[in-house]
Image 1: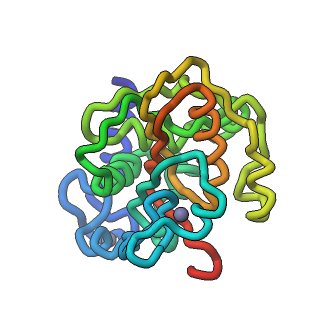
Image 2: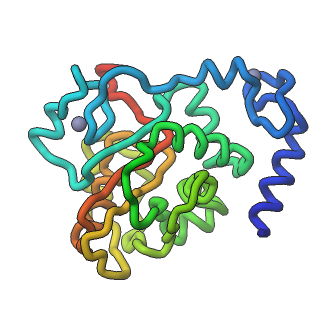
Length: 233
Ligand SMILES: [Zn+2]
Ligand SMILES: [Zn+2]
């Protein structure tokens, strides 16, 4: 209830101005129709496991050579301008009115027929949560339309790792290895893991590894934006 009030307040603050171009928007809309239409949506065939571009939608070479612990990834946007600006504003400036927009975009690319037992936002460490004041993954998960069993406490970050964004790609796997631990057994459950951005996939792989260790049968990544590797960007 309290959070709903925060969303309402934030929507009122935007006062019918597009968050990106400051043009007029429809009542309650965060973006105007042209800005919404111009968002860099992920298109074309993608690897079903990691959501990177892949000819004919086949499993990509990287997932074949080193299969990640997650089973599938869904992403709405390419992590480039202005998707990055929207995510930054939610993550670092606490612009909570953006959460329903980003969650709506994500919901639009999720398969309607896939059963999910529980939805887990990628946990932040207690220290980072204090520093930022909110967990962007939690805000996005909470704003997803439809009815999901949200379990923020299912998995905890047991090691306080450095921010992945501070590290070169190659160091990110090491940084998050064994960083997560699940609080309960997940006998054969399907878990959807929500995050704002999937870059190398190292964090999501570490979360999926913890979920699988706890007995999860299937782990799906639900992310708003996907970073394309430097060579393909
Ligand atoms: Zn606009
Ligand atoms: Zn792949």
